[in-house]
Image (cartoon, rainbow, N blue to C red; front, side, top):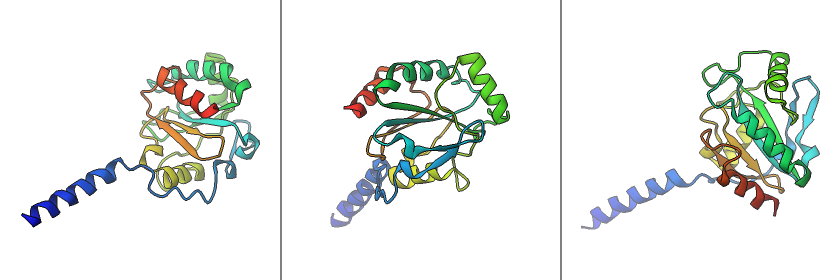
Length: 186
């Protein structure tokens, strides 16, 4: 009977480990320690956004979720003056759905969606070749910070730490997402 409880306890521990997404969270570095290049090739230093809520979304122009650009822009329009930074991160990691050059991505986003929020150059967001920001997010927040597809969302709190993550299916205008932004702003 004792072996049964040991096995049951072991299974319980293993199951709990699947749900624990914040195993390391040392945060020796913060989001503010990272830099990208924007679509024009200029440096985009996250340090410029200290004490703001940063929404980081990996994007792609030829994805079924591409229409989320509309809602990303709406969130940006509504919350930028309240301390929110919307940051689009083009990536070709999923289904090769962002094949264009940085210039083509910029033209597409501006012409089709009227995007005015900051956009970075195209980078990798998964695996060992991921941009250092994404490696940092994974190491400090766990598996939920790893994009599983285009339009994965990471909310960075005013303290520079990963506050929350949302899968591609969560629309930026959804009640759940807006509540997370507003909570982060408090």
